[in-house]
Length: 109
Image 1: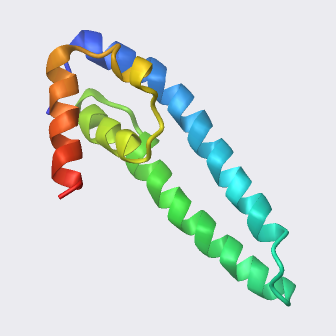
Image 2: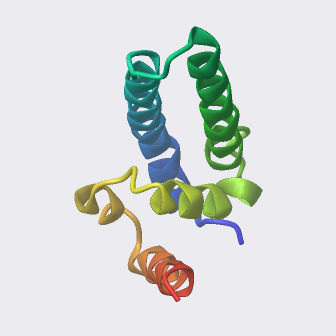
């Protein structure tokens, strides 16, 4: 599902903010893992590796290669991670917001 040009321009701008928020969240998770009370550094390392592997998958699906053909799927993934504010979402067209809301409904079943 391609986005119309006006929505695509908004997406390109807002994905930068969403990526920053996501990376901030990941780094806070990393900090918690590094400073947790696991008895060995190896256990902490393994937890960190798992976390980064999983978070990297999210970055790939939500942020890599922003093209018209991928924008809607990426936007849905960004929305699923709660990375956009309602004010930011309101910058999109009514049609696109309705599609996003439909995906939220489907996701929350």
